[in-house]
Image (tube, rainbow, N blue to C red):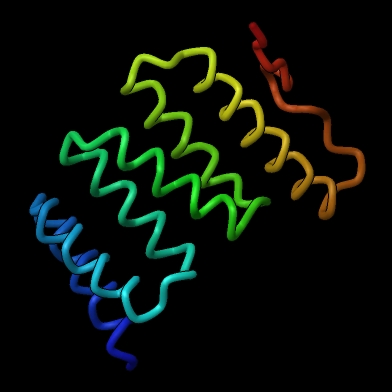
Length: 125
């Protein structure tokens, strides 16, 4: 197991124990060794949000989205973090993007899959 993976797993363990600051520290160590690892960025952002560091969580998950732009989970997380900041229109837009990406994945398995409930409406100013 690589050192980066060891830190990542330690961060997940701390997160599971509600030790969010410790999880953040371990995930940051993993990213020092492997900076472009979307899974660690997702985990870091979630720990940051649970620690009340919502603006940091948004910035971190946006980096994960840069690296994995078709990851519906990252957009779902972005939506949650934006909601926690009170940025509801932006959160709804991110949620719509997550639904669209999930539907695209479903279409690969089932070409006749109907669009998701709620559609893909994106609120714009």
